[in-house]
Image 1 (tube, helix red, strand yellow):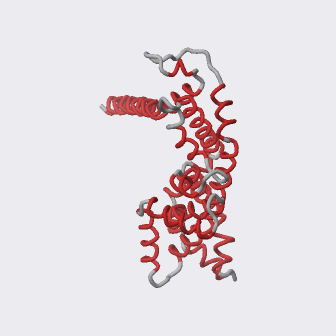
Image 2 (cartoon, rainbow, N blue to C red):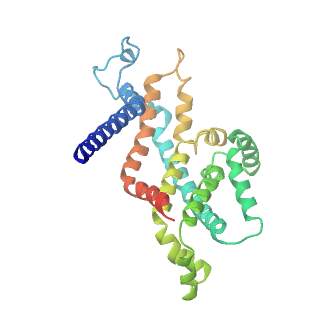
Image 3 (cartoon, helix red, strand yellow):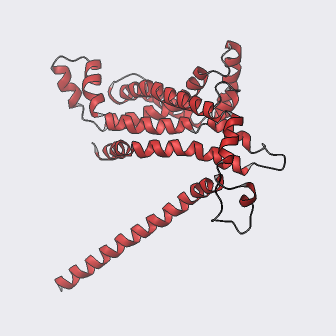
Length: 285
């Protein structure tokens, strides 16, 4: 009876494992197929894009990439996106990490209220902030500047960083700082010498997500820039009406591929730290 029960349990376990693998494959196909189709379309000639039924076998071309990158200054916009996304993410990490630590560890009067208000600011529609930001930037002569976009992006990245890092700091035992301060460290010394090093996985995963959020942001870049500091999402938004007869799907998919590929490559390069940070944040405490 026990042997049969053990065999039945083993069979169910194997079946469940296979079902999970199959479900994972199906979900991956559903999510990855649009990206695959975008990349495939970007290498098609215009006549192949509108064939019915769609063609999976065709003569590939990079003419769309070459033509549109020259005409729309895509390389310059990629550089702008890298500058703005990395700078805003790093600035938000510095401010948000210290704010998250203060909310997690330091007893401040009204700290919970302040933290809640900062979190609620994430619910404000971006357009409600974009227009006042544009008016202020125009008054100060800062329209179409990298610094303007960096500060604008920080308005939605800092609350995100603050609450993620607050949760991570709360998962760490208070005895770590207390032991350090007993040994002569100040609060700042304990934070920089003890807490930050052991929080590195959480810091890296938060930084990665922050850079991805900044990379794909459109509204602030559309309102606050014109040409000099314009980013890749603005270029994509302008392609839909680029053709007299409708959207230029070849250019749209080509620029979309150029935008997606750096994010995918970046995620693959840092996946070890990203997974470790998420796992540590879920298991500590």
